[in-house]
Image 1 (cartoon, rainbow, N blue to C red):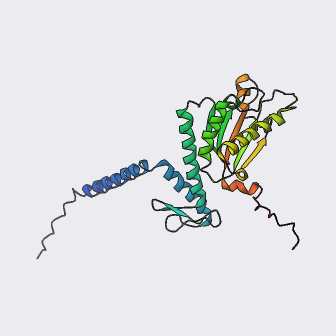
Image 2 (spheres, rainbow, N blue to C red):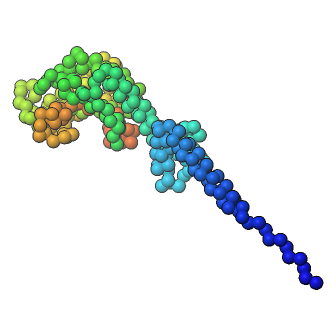
Image 3 (cartoon, rainbow, N blue to C red):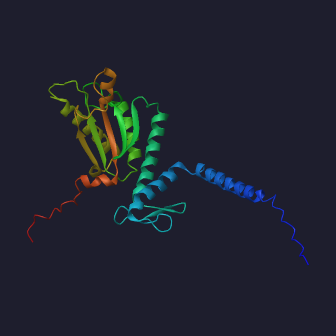
Length: 260
C-alpha cells in the first residue's frame, strides 16, 4: 500500500525573511548614522583623544576609569565616558580658544589678532600694528586695553604663559635697539609688564622671550609678509611642556642666613 505523499511546503515567501533582515539592518545603520551626527564635536574629540591615548597601554576608557596623565590629577567623566587629565586640559584649552575668538570677532580684531591651537598649546598672535608703533616697544593705549581683555581670559588657564616677540628681517640699529634681538625681547617684556601691572597676573606663570627675525611665519619677501612676521605671540603652554620650564621654588625665608 503506497503511503500518501506529504504535501510540499510552500517556500515562495521565504524571501520575506531575507527582506525583513535587510530592512532591520538598514534601520540600525541609519540609527547609528544619526547618533554619530548628533555627537557634540568637542565630546567626540575628547573621546577620540582618550582612545588614542589609552590604546597603547591596553586600558579601556569605556569600562573603567581612565588613568590620569598627570600624577595626582583625578580622572573625570564626560557623559559616561572616562577621560584623563590630558583630555580634560584639551577641552579647557578649546573653551578658552573659543572665548578668545569670540572676543576678537566682537571687537573687529580679526585682521590684527588671531588664535590657533598648536601642539604646544593655544597661541594668540598679535601683529605689530595691533600693539606697537613701527620700531617701538611701547604699547599704545588701545593695545593695552586689548592685552588686558585677553589677559583676563587667559588668566582662567592654570598653565604657564609664554610671551614671544618676533620681528621681520629688516635690520634696526638705534640707541635703544641695536638689533632685532633687543626689539623683540623688549616687546615681549612690555606685554608681560602690562599683564602684571594691570591685572596682577601671577609673575611666576609668565615668561618673555625674543626670537628676533629668526622664527618667521612666512618668508620676508614682501611688505605684507614682513608685517605678518612682526608680531607678538601669547602662548598658553600645555602642561606636557612644563617639563621644559624651570620649576618654581618656594620663597626664601628671611631667617635663612641668621645664626641659631
